[in-house]
Length: 252
Image 1 (cartoon, helix red, strand yellow):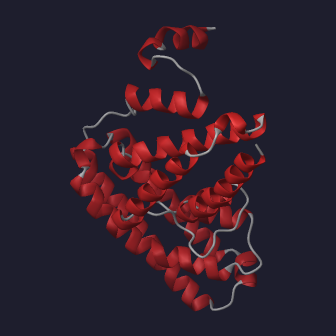
Image 2 (cartoon, helix red, strand yellow):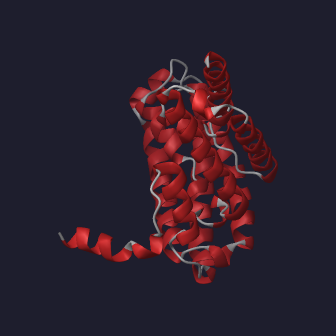
């Protein structure tokens, strides 16, 4: 039925428009310019709103007649439903903020901004640099309360990334090509210095406070892996039974 296809198309447009606002980092990866906000949501209010919206989206998909869709739209339906279910479940019981301190670092966004700079580069760069100190301050509060769930390996990796990010910011702000494209260099230098100081403080916090207390496991667990394999890759299998086949493949 044409009505089912039109309903799915409308829902898909809404899905990506809203979802990409919560994930501007992934919007950049997909080749879209973020709409106003350049960093992904990380506070409780925003993530609760995302969870609620995902619930509404899943209910909207459930009301569409799957059998009335053409094959391409059926594939779109399954991909969107699987992705929404996985993200909703992980927001409830596998919060990334309790797992990987590297996810708080806004360095990937700055890297991508440099690789594909917009016509007006200064405004998004100022926004990103300005956001780093407060974002990392909030991260330290969240991580301190969840230190035992962290893997020491991921904490050390995040500390190294923060340190390399500090040097990266020093280099890009001094680059001639960037200074030719941006006005207000005194403000830009001050913001970059504040961001570098915040990254250094975050690195010190991770090494000094978090590594000794981080006793969590590195993996996500069989339940989450099973969910991801099923909903995102459409592989119905028991992750606990995959050890020997994977080992054979690696040996081969």
